[in-house]
Image: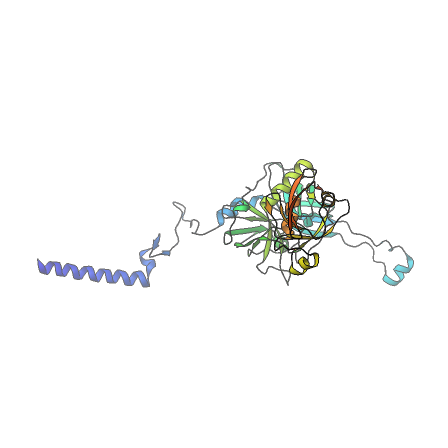
Length: 386
């Protein structure tokens, strides 16, 4: 009996040793379907002979969002030189004739079954004709419903039935490190999906738009991606791709998208009222610095210092003076100029709002009745994708 157990133990030891060697050197011999020792192998979808979605794949998110992302082609009539018919002009410069029409390229996102499309303002600005191409090959003429140069957003409308619509996500819940996909039509090569992560949140003071709260991502964004979708792993829209930081004109891993939380508000205002309404108080704000604090004799270590006040503007009528430091608007604490602009823009024109400020060493509160923010001239940004 003892000899039998000894032989059994030796046999088990040899088998375990052989199993260990094979599992280490040739795991595919033991695992042609499934996993072994943490090594993933190809798994075929039942009854199809076709591999199923690989672990970690974002293909489902891409399939869900891609149909709602469109390509936008614009054209603008050529501007003939007003002196082209002058004989002397033609003598020196030749018969230049009419220039070729200017064409542009961008992307957009269908956000409503009614045909509303979100894109960037700079994609459609000044365009005489807008052609929208869906991922399924259908074409439609795009009509501009409204634009908002301050956020570089625009809303188009197309007349087609059975439109695919993207699901709007919650950009306020995004975290640095979350995986995202950028979908658009870079360089006009056709719809393209790139992946990356959220590199940073709340990027502002970049000098791109008047109101900035960008999502930064390393998902490749190139010219032609403007107005396209930044989506999460569930295929939900988290942002509108807008700009890139680039020294070469191509992606360098630093792209910026407008959060969908901001885009939704602009979309709602344009669709319901035809324009975006923002508050305005008529001041020249600057970030607080020791030098400015000393110049104006204010003893404050946080807030935004006012260096100029428009005569008879809302702030002047409320009693705000140059040298005042605004520390809060309503319940929102103010730490820099961008936060002040955003807070004031969110106020309803004509409705009293409480401002907390510091004047010298005194703290006080004033009621300010904001006016309607004037239109901002359109600015084109170096390095932005077209």
